Image (tube, rainbow, N blue to C red; front, side):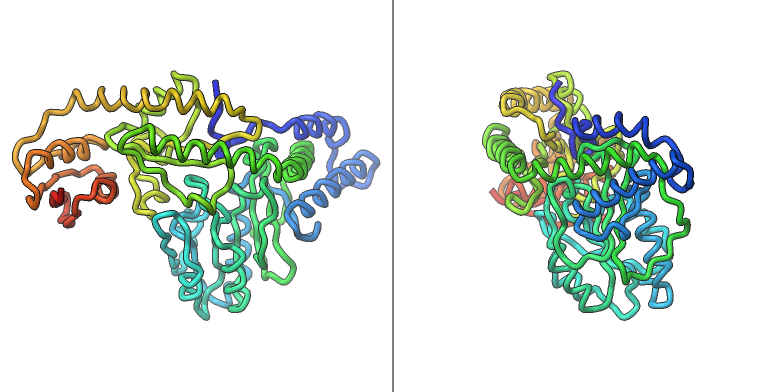
Amino acid sequence: MSYFDAASASPLHPVARQALLASLDEGWADPGKLYREGRRARVLLDAAREAAADAIGCRPDEVRFTSSGTRAVQVGMGGVLVGRRRVGSHLIVSAVEHSSVLHMAEGWGGEVTSVPVGREGGVAVSAYAEALRADTALACLQSANHEVGTVQPVEEVAEVCRAAGVPLLVDAAQSLGWGKVDGAWSVLTGSARKWGGPAGVGVLAVRKGVRFAPREDEEFGNLPAIVAAAASLRAVQAEAAVEAARVRELTGRIRERVAVSVPDVEVVGDPERRVPGIVTFSCLYVDGETLLHELDRAGFAVSSGSSCTSDTLTPSHVLKAMGVLSEGNVRVSLPRDVEAAEVDRFLEVLPGVVAGVREKLGGEVTPPQGTTVDSLGKRCPIPVIELAKAIKNVPVGAVVTVLADDEAARLDIPAWCEMTGHEYVGAEGTAYSIRRTR
C-alpha cells in the first residue's frame, strides 16, 4: 500500500520513535514536583520546550503544549479573544481556514468577517487591510491550506495587522514541518502528527506582549509524547531543504501528468506558492467515494475534499470558497520517504481507475430529453453528468435548465461551465440555467 495522505497524519518519524522510547523511562513523573524523578521529568520538558521554540522561532517561555492541534487552536483563539474583549469582539478569518478555526469563530458570539480567496486559494493582503476595524480583537490566517496546499502571504498580512495593533493567529499545521513561519505573527499553532510526531500533541506559541487569557492554564502532561514531538520537529526541519526539493518535484510531476492523462480534470491550488507535498485535482463525472475506494483497491491511500465522500456530506468549504469543482476530488499528500516509483505507478493506474468509475456511472444514467434535466433527488456527480449529455442535444445558444437539490450542484454546475466553456446563466432555487456556447 502506498500511503499518500500525509496531510492528515504523517508516519512516525524515526527520531520521534527513538525519543518516545527513551523518555518513557525518564519522563513518567510529574514535572511539577520537587523530588528527583519530578526534577528529571522537568529537565526533559524544558529541553522539549527549547527545541520547539527553536524550530518555531520564538522564546521557550512563549511555548506551551496541548493535547492536539485542534486544542491549540481553541486555546489560542479563546485566550486572545478573552484577553482583548475590552477592545471589541470583531474577528477576521479567511474563507479557507481549517474547520477548527471556523468552528471557534462560529461559536464566539461576536461579528466575524470572512475574507474571500481567489480561484487558486490565496487571500489578498489588501482584503485583510480592509477588514481591520477599531474593534477587531483577532485576525486568523493559515500558513498553508490543508486541502490544496496553497501558501498564504502570512508575512505581509502580519505586518498589516501589526501596524493596526491587531494580533494575528497563524495555523501552521501544514507548513511547520517544512520550516519556520516568517513574519510578525502573534500566535501560532501546530500539530505533531502532521510532521511525523506522535498523535495527541499540539503546540501553541504566544508571543510576549499579546493580551492572552486562556480559560485554563494547565499544560498537557503526556511528557514522552511531547519530547518525541519536539525532537521530530527539529529533525524534519533539518531535513526540509533537501526533502522539500525532492517531494516538490514529485507533486509537480503529478500536477503535470494528471492534466494530460486524465480527460476533464481540474488541478487546483496555486502551482507555485504551495507546500511541497500536496497536490489536489477534481475529475468531472466521477463519484468521489467510489473513486477513493477504487484507488484503495489499487493500493493507494488518498484523501478528498469532495462532497461525495463518506466523511464529508457537504461540499468542501475550501473548494467552494475557491469556486472550483468539488466532485471527484482527490488530494494526494506525499510522505517524506515516498519513492518516485510509487508516484509513477499511481500515475499509471489513475487514468484507468477514473475511466472505470466514469463508465460505471455513465451506464446508469438515462440520456435526458429536451432542455430541462430533472435531477432532483440525485447525488453528485449525476446532475452534472446529465447536464453534459443534455447540452449536446440542443443547438448553440440554447439554454438547458437543470433541476437539482443536491447542495454540491450549487458549486459543481458553475465549475463545470468554467471548465467546459459554456455560459452559466444563473440559478433560481433548485433550477440552474446553462447556455450552450460551442
